[in-house]
Amino acid sequence: MQTLPTPPTTSDPSSQTFVDTTIQRRKTRPVQVGNVTIGGGAPVVVQSMINEDTLDIEGSVAAIRRLHEIGCEIVRVTVPSMAHAYALKDIKQKLAETYQAVPLVADVHHNGMKIALEVAKHVDKVRINPGLYVFEKPKSDRTEYSQAEFDEIGAKIRETLEPLVISLRDQGKAMRIGVNHGSLAERMLFTYGDTPEGMVESAIEFLQICESLNFHNLVISLKASRVPVMVAAYRLMVKRMDELGMNYPLHLGVTEAGDGEYGRIKSTAGLAPLLADGIGDTIRVSITEAPEKEIPVCYSILQALGLRKTMVEYVACPSCGRTLFNLEEVLHKVREATKHLTGLDIAVMGCIVNGPGEMADADYGYVGKQPGYISLYRGREEIKKVPEDQGVTELINLIKADGRWVDP
Ligand code: SF4
Image 1 (cartoon, helix red, strand yellow):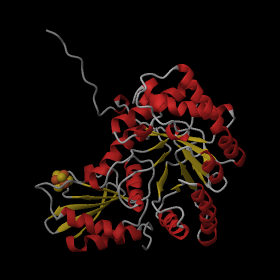
Image 2 (tube, rainbow, N blue to C red):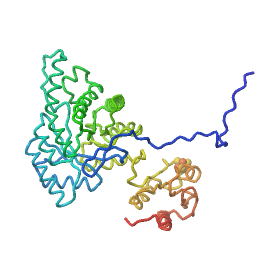
Image 3 (cartoon, helix red, strand yellow):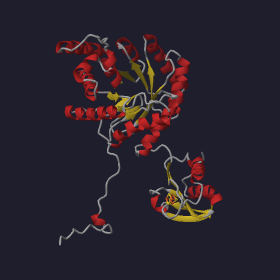
Image 4 (cartoon, rainbow, N blue to C red):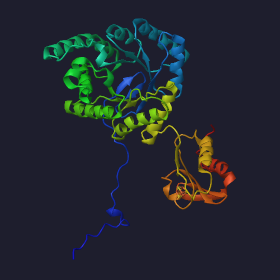
């Protein structure tokens, strides 16, 4: 008879393998944007974009300030014309006078070389889109792209990019090479197709020009509105950069994610797998809502992955037939009373059968004990049983007694 191997016993600690659950972030070079660092081990930076017309100085200053006050660390503005580039001088100055210096990024589009050169004097970072920076109108009758044509445009890109690179380099400012799947240059489409490869090679062409001019304050993005394309593009970019010995930080985003619940889920579906693999140094969630709505989504994604802790982490069971109180209502009450206590983990669990074991090492637990009563826990230790109607007050008292309470 065949003898089966003896399974290892779990009671023997030496037989257990402990897996490090901390996300190991890809090592990137630090890139300074005003007073914020992207990459180089700095916390993942949250950014967004105002939708005011940049010519509206007062409105733009107010919008930038609103975003910055709720945690947006870098704010992007669009600069479609020379007049908009000049307006940024006033915006920057007004922010400094009435609020504080906020790291600003200017978004430059079609054939924006002159605009980029002007705005580079007033902002901390310029974002260019390789597909549009030297814009060649697609020819509808084209069937191929010769190497000579490819190289000719490549030379034109170099010539056009050089003054901007030198300006940013000499001022110690940064550039984002922001590729978009939806606006790849025609010559890239012909050479690589409408693919992640095309996106990555677009970025690399610009990166190599910057490197040849000894400019390294670079951040790369490869956004797409389709999550699998965007995820593949970032992964391929990391592989290519590793091959080329490059370590530029990455700006992650899903473009045109839409609005509401699906917009948030779609953004999370794109960002989370990359961030979980340690890829990504700054993020933007692009939803079709007021930019202020993007910031909590960014922080929730980063907090859920353990990359930043900006709010209380709540652990709560889904409730079941054993639940001894109205879990949804109690969780809401606990959250309202404690949501300002950044840094704590608080669990709300329906019963003592599974609750204490599944509180995931929360700092405090509120657990159904018996009908009408709950138990309060500190870590895994049961501290006291109290009538349910005093549960939230007693939880606050326990946190206060531990010296971990601050007034809202
Ligand atoms: S902790 Fe208790 S009440 Fe909550 S889901 Fe588990 S068994 Fe049900």
